[in-house]
Image (cartoon, rainbow, N blue to C red):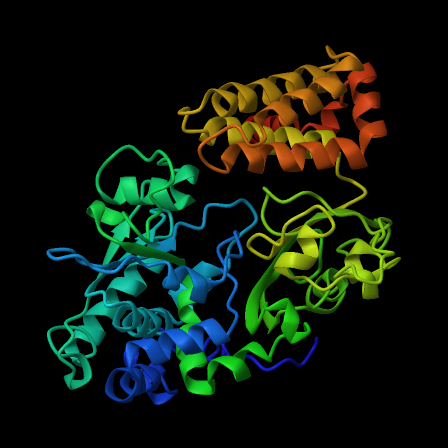
Length: 464
């Protein structure tokens, strides 16, 4: 196991780490006190910008720049902070570790961020299935109130602060920030047209910053170390502006699935073989890996970085396997995929990529909010075509149909759900086309069809 220093997760292993008594003994709220009593909001914003925190929720937008977009308050307006803790992306389970094991780190980050952007209220929007996360956050907020870290005069500062936990109803679309805001307001969880962006008109019509759990949880360490020093933890060169440490998730066919902390810029090979312990079954090789939640296009070990031009930002990795490219927002964009939530799903040679894509397309068809026609019709169409292929009722031209449907979904909807459906579908077909063509001619054996296989197991178990 690599020996990188744990910073964000350094309190995870303490007994009862989620309680204020333990967290405070290990340093919690020291940086909030420092920020509110000795720093100006502009100084905090400057440190966050220097830290080069790329948003940890999936889009990878620089947090410091996002804070800079906040519209100046007009008379009668408030500024709000909203934390996106929906974490509904399949394969992603990192934010819940913060909420369950160290909720006071998130609360401390919220306090500093609210002070920096001039907000007095914060909502943490948590997926309702994360029952333990909700319970621990609510308990942490009560403890912080009782100690005077929240309330009318936190740390003696005339800047009232309050935080509310808002359980969402479990819709995937509410991970999109404007759908989340609609849901928070009690409306149907549908994306809004942008502009205006939330920083101009967000929750309840007020300027709002929406940040991910991990992004805000990094802020106390940025204040402690200074933005530049925190940024330099990254293994990437400074000019790539992707700084710090982050949480990496790994699941699927590896020996040690879980959540690990490491600097930005480790490789997928390190994540799979050093952190994840390597392939689960020695006789089954790696077939593909979805790098950052199910919306991100699949990678293969045999694919190489193509960047011959010396001026290309990926030139130093030209000719190397995609698994040996540093994991970062811009490096992964350069090879046609996304870093996303940085939670990888590893698949060995036992996996049917047709069935894997069918499973994902069914999910997206179920979760599409239905507001945009290309998404509403396209996701269901993709699932139906794959159902026909799996059942042996397809034809080779259906493989090209999958591509056509996907291409007509891309860029034609309000939010990114359609793109997040089409991009992985296109990558599956492009990289495993032969497998799709074979399935279109012969169908999938029952043993490869997860729904049928699982149903058969349940029937046998019931009969026994």
